[in-house]
Length: 317
Image 1 (cartoon, rainbow, N blue to C red):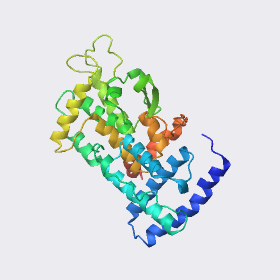
Image 2 (spheres, helix red, strand yellow):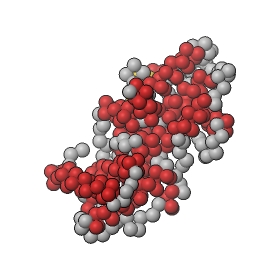
Image 3 (cartoon, helix red, strand yellow):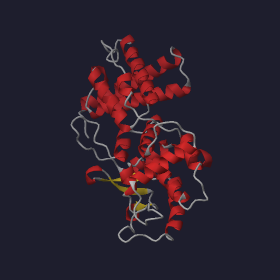
Image 4 (cartoon, one colour):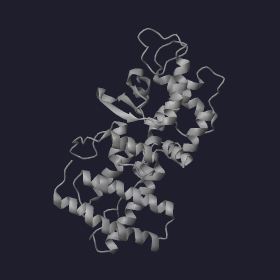
């Protein structure tokens, strides 16, 4: 999407100056820890990106604009803790702008989070996800299939219906992508981690020995007993049972992995637009004009910001 030169000036040059001063303000006057400082900067980058999509200048933001921004984050599946921190960061930024004389009013003054926070689903930590996977009984015939299911859910942020409908013919594992059919039969390409690819390949070595029901040969995940495509109910059951075994007392469902995927990417500083594209969401602009994202750049976002890939890079380093 192209923006007028005037707005580009607002976002590129003025923002850089203000961001530099704001960073100094957080470091010197607020004495924030490096982790909190980085989180505040990521949150602010997401806000500025959102405002740019709406063709708004940060100086003219209203409380309604900020509420819309929060709604977008909730829609992506951000955790309650992350939303609370985001709101804290926004308040800090606009108080700074008020002190600096950059704005006349603080749009965050009446901004509240508790009402919307009640509707925010639980999110799993990376450690909790690993705990659930480690609880899979390797002596059971479905063990490798279930490991692959959890890794694909978390690595790709799929809806449970998308997981159940995933086809072998839609996998491009050598290229690091899968083709997903989402709501309204809309297709999208989603990057997949090397960890998920590895688990899938282990599953495929076992899948060849299962008698597949005619007409179900192309489904990635099949039932051992029926030989047909795995159902949503079965995936729910698998997730619930593993959460109990892992001692995780949260409202967990397959969708929790989708929320965790989005939250971890957001917290890692990934681009809002790329996350939305990977989740199969609509445009963040109110006009809902779809902006094409270069698929290579989306894959780079995943490689740079998803915990599975970050951990891999650290090990290599």
